Amino acid sequence: MELIDTHAHLEDVKDLAEAIRRAGEAGVKAIITMGSDSESNAWALSESSDYQTENVRIYPALGIHPWSIRESKIEKDVEFIERNIHKAVAVGEIGLDYWYRGLSRNPQKKELQRTLFRRLLKIAKENGKPVSIHSRGAWMDCVEITAEMNVKKAVFHWFSGPEEALRKILENGYYISATPAAEYSKWQRAAIRSTPLENIILETDSPVSYRGEPAEPMHILRSLSAVAELKSESERRVAEKTTENARRIFGI
Ligand SMILES: [Zn+2]
Image 1 (cartoon, rainbow, N blue to C red):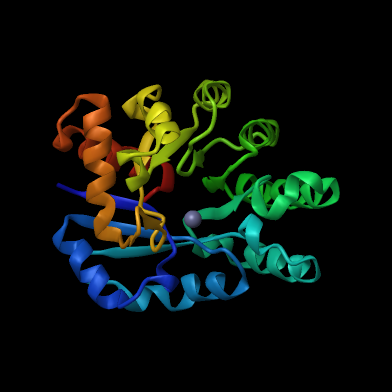
Image 2 (image 1 turned 45 degrees about the vertical axis):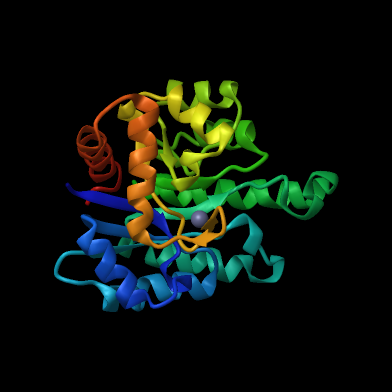
């Protein structure tokens, strides 16, 4: 079985070398490590490859997470991404989060998120790169802006939003990704049930904790078994299909 962890934050994973070794044993062939801010973008580009093994390739993505927006640093961070995006497989993690620290009550900060999101989508579009999108509490805006910017390949990472936003995602030929939360999260489970396997990929968002346990890339096996259960398919079939999807989206 070959698996690809399409969304992780490897710079924050404990005992990374050991975690990568365990991932290799679990069948993980590749991991895409997301950039969230200037430090993690630099790490993804120049240090993440030190942790590659014979079995596990590591690919960088470059982005600015909506939680990491610092107004004074935006120009520098965007320039860095523009200059280096040809060395990355995707633009991510980017997106909008209207639930972050009472943001829904701050229209200015919301607009700042949207402006930056558009700029980063433009970089993806101009460079033919896919995007990995964080859309918590801002599902419809995320889909509409991505479609309006004419981005062709977009993954709505850990999608747990409402049915109408999911419908738009699928109408546009976009993807959602499943994390280990697919074992128990009502919204993520509903989204996976309503999405054809052709539009699903797997990830861990490591080192996020799921029910108290910090994730590492081998926990993609949990995402896999949850999706297999929800789709009434064999794990083998889900692994084949989602890995094929991931290879096509990210060109790896
Ligand atoms: Zn993430």
